[in-house]
Image (cartoon, rainbow, N blue to C red; front, side, top):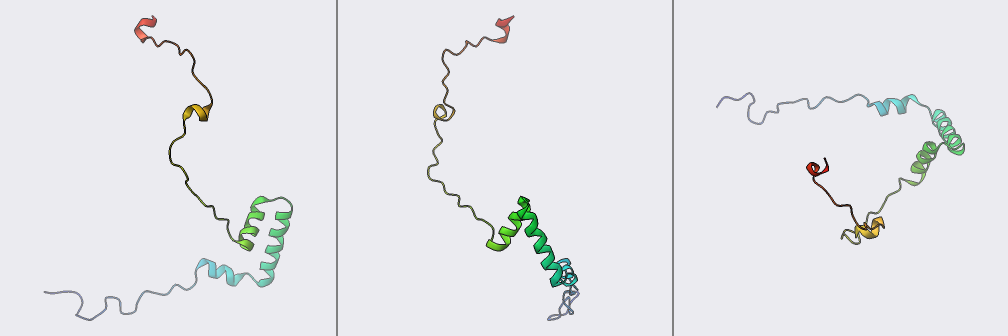
Length: 101
């Protein structure tokens, strides 16, 4: 049997090429600590002025994202008469379309 590789030989002897820097690493290196502090102050000012997105971002960063519990107690469907609180009294008689002419 003729194969491309000899037994015990790797098909990629140098391994996967290294990625120099990800986009996040480039941004982290480019922004100084003072810049980060200024951005945090601006975010805080926006939150105080009523910007809800800025407030949520600060709260998530400070306290973590809120988790929601989903619990199911009863899986039987409710009675539609109790949910919609109406009752049909004397429904109109249904006539075929041919009889309505």
